[in-house]
Image (cartoon, rainbow over all chains, first blue to last red):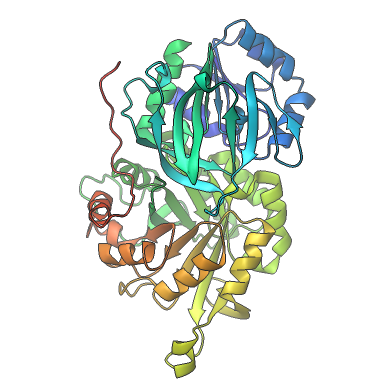
Length: 201
Length: 268
């Protein structure tokens, strides 16, 4: 069973429908017990970082998510769910994240339009990014965000995208994967990425 | 590079697509789910449903359409038309829409923009602006063009300047502006490039140009001279005059970044 974590933010239906379409069993839930037993966890979400963290705390989901990650359950963070994996964000003051991946989430400060909204190219940084299997380099994916993540350890970066400057658009550390873009909104190639993740579960 | 977006718009009434759609291989041209699926396969970057359902009792039909679409179409979906409240937006997003487009309600209740963007995030709040030129055909207008905001489906002018309103909705938290030229809409003579550029230069949020598309060249003009981030079109796609792929090829040849059909490659 794939668990899509419901923490009151974002388009959960699209993620769960995409996973369903790929033939996997999926449950959208905020139950720590169900998350604990999941074969794979997807943390989606759009919206503000501090509200995301507040909700995860209020629902008492942070311990079970950290535990699942440390015991090796495949984990995919999408957009805000990707940013929350980091140490802290500067959105609305400084707000601490899950600190699974060391690094900061920063606001775009260039002159380009914000949010970074639309389809942009994703450049793979290394061959080891299994979730990009079968996806050609520089393919377009759908992004919507005003903040970007900057990992301390550059080795976790598996893809980057250019918007004013280059930023990290996908990471992998052990069983944890994170993408800044929305695979559930990125047509066939997005489904391919979700399918690749499901095959790891 | 961030691609310019090509967005087909479907008018939906009581759960059915209205205005003729003329595709080959379409089983039911009135089914919004099927039409949206076809556009997605043709490489549309987003889909907009404009709900023109008039009766209050049938308003919920759009939620059903959105739910069914979100089960099959995996590109961003925006819904506009008749949205009055936070609850309306919440239901649309919960059904699977990615963005809600506000128009009349945004003018009549500015707090709705702020509350909605605080609650759901700016990225899912689009403000649609219907703009009409003032003093059309006069020398003053030619030298120093101005546009006025209209509401109630373009029936009611409200004396508000379009550029000022665009700046205000941005400040209130709108994530995007869907800008329709009432002068150009339906003419197929091209977008109002001056209007599009004026708004796009005034705000630093994305602007979708709408109204007047008749040829791929028109889309090209809106994206280059008009500085739009995206272009909305209806009839040129609905009547299969041009496919989305054809339009994108045309734009790409002119140096505009567009998303050409994604490719799967051999597994590593």
